[in-house]
Image 1 (tube, rainbow, N blue to C red):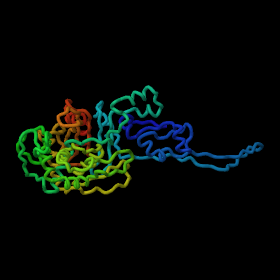
Image 2: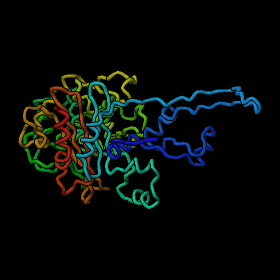
Image 3: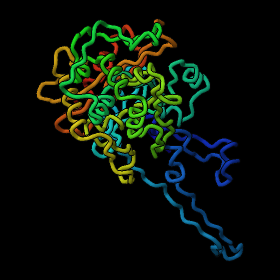
Image 4: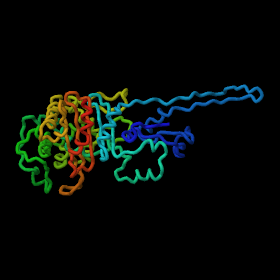
Length: 416
C-alpha cells in the first residue's frame, strides 16, 4: 500500500504504484495477479528494491496425527527504504510558487550536486492514480493540452538569457571578455554585415557603451553576440563542451542530454544566437542548474544526484575561479541595481545573485512567437542552494518578471 503525502507537488518525481497488468506478468512471471508494482517515476525505477519479496512455506500435514512437516520455507523480505536528497519543504514551496502556471523548478546544492527540489506543473494526483483512477478522470488528464504527466524539469528548452553567464565566464577565461572592456553599440538592432541578410540581433536597452557587467545586469544580447563572434566557433564550442553538453547524467529518471547545436556552430548567426541562449541550444532545468553551479561554486561544475550516498564524479573545474567570481559579482548587481533585470528579487539583509532570461519560440525573425521565462538565483554569501525556475508562455504577462514574482517567496525561504 502507498500514500503520497507530497502528492501533486512531487508526483512526477515519485510516481505511483498500481496493480499489475497481464503485460507486466508476461514480462515478469514472478508477478501474480493483484500484485502492486511501480508504474511511473522513482516507484518504477526502484520497484525491485522497494517491493521486496513474498515469503511462503510448503508443508505436509499428517491427516491422522495433524503433525506438520515443513518441506521448504522462504522468509518474507521487506522492501528497502530509499532516502532522497529532496527537501520536502523546499519541494512544496517551489511547487506552490508555480501555482497554476505551466513550468518547472530545479533546486540544487551547487557545492555537492544534491538535488533539493524537482517540481513540474501542471501535475496530477498520485494518490488517485494509486487507488485506481476512473476512466473519465484519466481522460481529463490525458486530454489536457498542457500535458500534466510531463516532468518539465527534465524536458529540454532553449535557456534564453540566463545562458549569458556561461558565455561571459568563457570569454573571461579566454581573455576576450574583460571587466573594463567596453563595446560601442548603437541602437537596438545589430548585424555583423550584409551577409546576414534581413537577420539582426536585437536588445531591449539602448546603451551606447557596454561592458560585461552592464551586459549581464541589463541583459544585452548584442554585446554577447559580438563577444562570441570574437571568440570564434571552434573555441566557443570547445569551451562549452566542458559544461557537460552531450553528457548523460546518471539519474533515476529519463532526461535527454543537453545540446549545443544540431551539428556545429560554423554559421555566424547561429554562433551569435547561441551566445545569448537561443539558436539550437537545448537544456533541461536540471542541466541548467548543473551548468550554472560553476558561477556559484568557484568555476566548478557539479554532477547532480538524487541519492545522498551515491558517488558521482568530482566537481570539474570548467572556468577559472576568478572568471566565475567576476560573473557572480555582476549577478549580484543584477539584483541590487534598481535597473537590473533581477531587481525584483532583492531581499533586505540578503546578498542574492541572479540572472533572468526569456527564450523566444518562433520559426523565423519577425514572427510573433511564444516566450518562456527563466530565472536562476543563489545566495552569493552562502551558496548552499541554486534555483532555476521556468514558466512557459510569459509573453505579455511580465516575461521573466512573472517568474520572479511567482518564485520570490520560495527563494526568500531558501535564504533563511
